[in-house]
Structure formats: C-alpha cells, structure tokens
Length: 204
View 1 (spheres, rainbow, N blue to C red):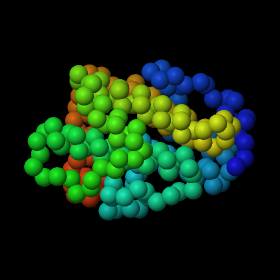
View 2: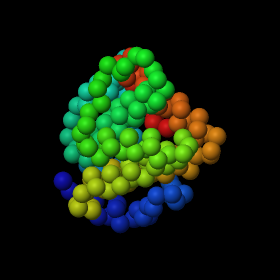
View 3: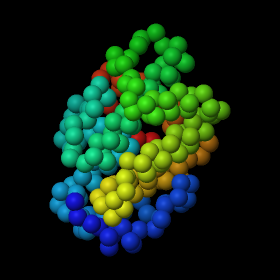
C-alpha cells in the first residue's frame, strides 16, 4: 500500500474526550482525493456498526456471522472485534433483564478482549452513560492497536475516521441523552439478534 504522508501530516492529533476538529463526514470528503480509488472506496465501510447497511440493501444485515472481508485488515479486524463486543453486551443485558427468550446467536469469545470488555462494562458502570464512556475508551485503545505501525498507511486514515466518530458521539452525550441512547441501542441490538436483522443507521 502507498504512503499517505502528506495527508496524515496535516491531520490534527486526536485525544479521547476532546472536541472533534471536524465531523466524520467532513473528514471523508477531505481525505478522499488523497487516496487511491480502492482505498477511498473503503472509507464508506468505516463505521462503528460492524455490519453497516450497504446502499440498496433492504433486508438489513445480521450479526449472525462476521461481515465478509472487504480487503482491509484494519476494517475486517474492527468489525470482528465490535461484533463480538455487541453480541456479548446483548447477552449480558438480556440476562440482566431476565428475558426468557435467548438470542439465537451465541456470542463469540474471540477476540477475547472484546468479550471480556462486555462483562467488565456491565460490572463497573454505575450508570448507562458511564457504561458508554467506559466502552468508548476501550474502543479507542483497540483502534490504536489495530492501526499497526505503518503510521502513514491507509490504516491510519481509517483509524482516524473511527476516532472522529467516537469523539462526535461523546460530544453529543448529555446525561439524559446518554441514558436514553444506551437503553435504546442495546435494546435494539438484542431485538436485532433475536430477529436476525441489524438496526439501521449509524451506531449511537
């Protein structure tokens, strides 16, 4: 893969919790002209949702299986990690809510850190908003690990976009909003796992 030194060198350094310097949409528009056609096309697949709905797809995606490989080790690794996290969160919340109907998809145990994170998030968070923050910090660390050591490669561009999405989410959090979004997100995940469809739209 080619080097994107000029693009990466222009990007403001990101720190978790800061005000995002630009929106994810603005970054996609900014970065696209610098990338190869192949790498630019993958920008649209970078999302917190491990199964973002494709254009024209009416049935919805399912968390029953990993999304097909897109040709990027970073995006594929992220999707696998986030899918494991979400399915395990759904299982723990279902148990906590004492739901009688079990999800048809047994949450995977790999990657192990994603599986264990779901357990810890349910145990340490005193409020739904704290749970969101705890999970997003872990997401941030995972993104940096998946990015690898090729600092001027395409993985850095995709990692930067994911971080902007996380910063945008955090910037929108208020206690009441966070509580509502936390409940609705994971209720939707549980429902989607049980029905075999993924909630549409960007992860909140």
